[in-house]
Image 1 (tube, rainbow, N blue to C red):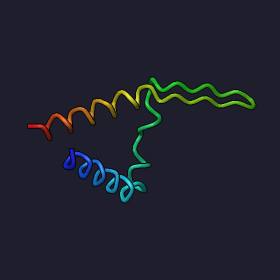
Image 2: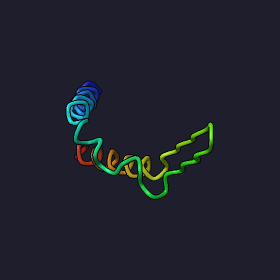
Image 3: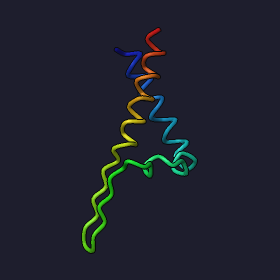
Image 4: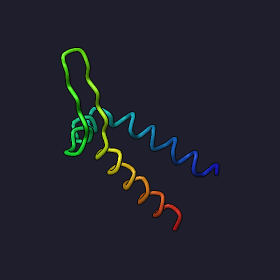
Length: 66
């Protein structure tokens, strides 16, 4: 459990350091993300982005277990 928490902390640190470059990636604007834009209302639900990120995290954790 401690190893997992340390790895998650290091990943969060790396994402924080690399945020200027990561923000330029197309995540968050994928086809399949739901955006409802009205005059005084904006609803954004990143469905496709969440699926892709979930698959990536699952693969990373699967490789770390082996």
